[in-house]
Image (cartoon, rainbow, N blue to C red):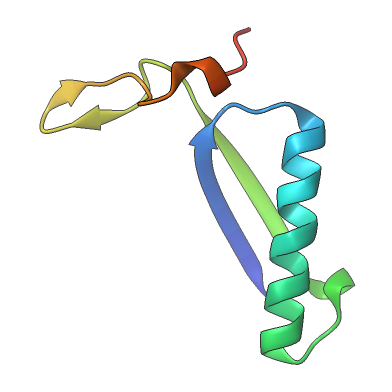
Length: 68
């Protein structure tokens, strides 16, 4: 069973559902398996949960981040 890990800035559940569905379709098609055997795991990053070059960074497009 394929497992796909997605790390991204927090998104609304309906956005994650659309992403998961498309990932499952592609993996199932290319892996010659059924979509119900594909697992997609999301790990939400926070504004202070990402570093580039040793410095804490914000997303390049913060308007898409869902704030708690």
